[in-house]
Image (cartoon, rainbow, N blue to C red; front, side, top):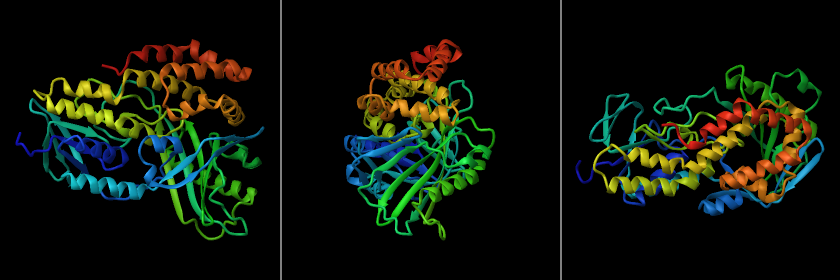
Length: 423
């Protein structure tokens, strides 16, 4: 391989791809980025807890921050004394692209058609027949990638959301210091009983300057139809909720619309494949919340370290991918993922009243318990302690569901999966 040849191709140009590329080039890796439109603006809103944003190095790219959040339930609200933040995704994206280009990253505007591994490394064949060579490839193209082999498992659950950005009218100013609404599980009215929707909650961010972002969200459900088929009902429920609250006069059109479909609890990637993955392609979505960005940021440095180390000691393609997989998914994180996925299956079967009760009781736990749980930042022992504490304090119906799941096939499957990524 020539001295200046690309060592690593990263497929995709979303947050996972660019964050990993930025960390790899900082370690001297010669990186290429392959994507159909590498500079296209990222569409979803990316938000995270404020302390996570500070810890993970994106505090300088925040568009908004709130001193606290709030959750609302049938029995009353809970103040979550934890800051929340909205990322200025476009500014961060352009900064990552600029740093990558300044470091000599090769950017290829094309669409991947095939990946072939051989004794020298890997070849990527594009749809226009262009062939790209490297020693390693990381697929960071998102949840729907066809190039990553996964463990056996059932269909994923889906988080589906309809979001809108509105200019607030009618004398209801939105103040920047208002708390953001992390979850509002209260009912949107009696018409819910006739709607074919799983339980949904409202997520709302007051953006100041009389703007409000609102989103009606199915947390996680096994869907009977295509996810997009739920958008009209979610939109109708969102509008009804806003009209009942008096927060908005729904005149005209929203400034922006966001449609969100996130697979949750999708099977983990196999650890014996030479095609590496990162972000959504590596099933790094938090199975209990649907968040992805914090996992991407938390792991990128150590994954870049592993890639740089393997390339520096390169003697052939036999073992590097297997060792890098251990950095993408550590045994500790696999065990935590199994625990989260077990909880996801229980939550997804609850009706609206049960879901409301579940989260009301969850946020009644001591703050340090739910902080680590929703951020996926604590060790497995801490996660298990939180789950046991919740089990001991929850109401009898939910405790019964948890007991039945733990003593049945789901509990057995979880325990069997604690060993790590399937080989």
